Image 1 (cartoon, rainbow, N blue to C red):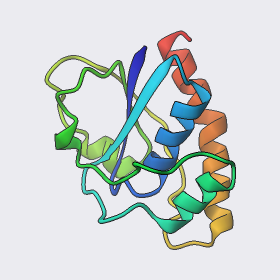
Image 2 (image 1 turned 90 degrees about the vertical axis):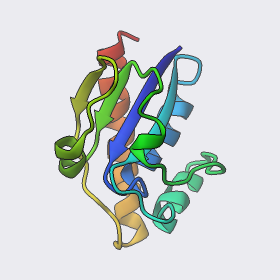
Image 3 (image 1 turned 135 degrees about the horizontal axis):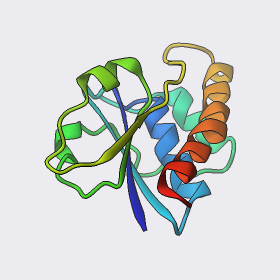
Length: 134
């Protein structure tokens, strides 16, 4: 089982959707977590609704600070926004990382969250499979 961390700034939209999608689409191969460099107080309602609309569970999704997970043994770190890439901390042990930016739908209509969700499902799942040799 490979451990993947999806990192963004607020850990309220993109990284949360990526965590849920990776855990669903690569179940049995990957355990995904998400975190933020400056986490927001809650997951965006649009992200929760976009995940629910495709039948994915959202229980247990909450913004986490990267400091809370930095010592976990990740096999891959994926930054999904430019700010997170620039602020990405130095992990205590070497870890492979990739940058795959996605549009930030925060504050936009539900359709924007759904487009970003689908983009994450298409591009991020494939990239993680490739990077981890799955």
